[in-house]
Length: 624
Image (cartoon, rainbow, N blue to C red; front, side):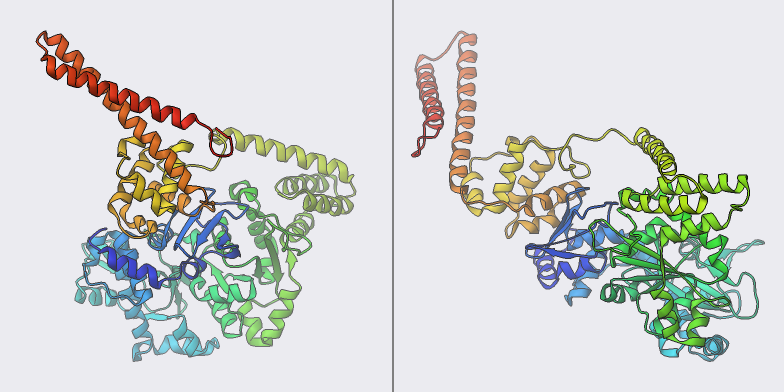
């Protein structure tokens, strides 16, 4: 596929552990011979994403996505097939003989090359004489230089075209630099200038550790204090977290993720042993960011400094439980009690820091123990938001109580777990001096209205059963079972391929599998590289990952052979009949030829009758 030999692809697959690969992005847990987790390609409450290490494939029974290691990386990182092959070959230690210019493989790889070059340039600049001011700033802020190197910090030199000059030496077109968000067009005249100048740079990386953007900290009082890359084809702010690539291992180890607001907060947390820390890249946390964290841990703790713990923090956290995040579909039933062992629960807690401190300053002033104590005292998200909603209204006035009552009812209506909502309603009712039952009824009414609104906006559900892969209508059961048998049982391929025709399978996706299976030697999972569409790959994964006993495969194959023999002979009867009819219509049939055709017709008809009778006779147990 795409110029890569099947032998090369097989060697890469054989050296890769797909559980390890997928486990970098999905929190997998063993279930029998498979590993299971929440699908990274759609929001779900119950894990339906399955990885089969023996075959080296994945499949989601919820959205139908499926494939091998190449397909996973293509879908997850938005790569082309050549990019995925080279990335996994490097990971597996396999040399890829074919060498292409990055531009030939599409926009994403070209931009990644540019960002890698920029990252190298900025990193070199930090450790050269011109980066002295940035190094002094890091020392003043207490950042260990080894930590700075580990995070790949850099420095954008003064001047208007330092990066432009470097990129010109690398033959990078200026318009590509614009697409990467690294340069800007001059406001007067022609040409471009560097976006980042005289700033300490924090590379923002994707989960694979590849630079996709930068955050630049001013060093001499310039405004803005922090200048960030714009969104590009590689970088979407609300779908990215700073230091996620570095923090993944710590998250898995502690089964916890810490969210802070600033780059330096994140660096200092890692420096003091909190290796599970990431930073949000915007004014508010998003559902996509929290969804990323849920792949690696069962608990998230958001840290806010004392100033942010007022209106700003309350607003941000209330945004976490808005309709746009659709909590039930994400499965974020937040445990007030902290009991996140129960299925479907995702613990989100809030830690508020002492007055005058952010994570950076607290760690430098009081050390890791002080932050650990604050984390230990972190409160469940909903309890925190409820407190803020009540504290921000004047409960001594009728208007204040009415406003608080309405806010609390709206908050409760967004809680996806009834037990949680009941406990919160009792607490809120006690503090508001109202009847808990009435508050709960109002919340239920609001919840019902929101649910009906979502139902009206959502397209009609498809028929029952697991969804078909993207691009493929649901196949009928007989054809699906036939392909499953061919994929899992080598005897079926040997016995049925000589008499099975491609036209015997009507479903387009299954027919593509049949054609590929005929022409591709080796294990069936090798077909992944032969299939061009995600729908077909998902269908193949669904069939390969099935846990089905094939103890009666021989009898199934025998029955299928008879079925297709009958079909072939009936087709022959039809052809002979049409030949006789054409000869008679011509008015000049050769009698000898006609007699031959009639005898052939009789033999074919008798063969069909015998096969049909044989299919209806009882077996040795007396069952038909």
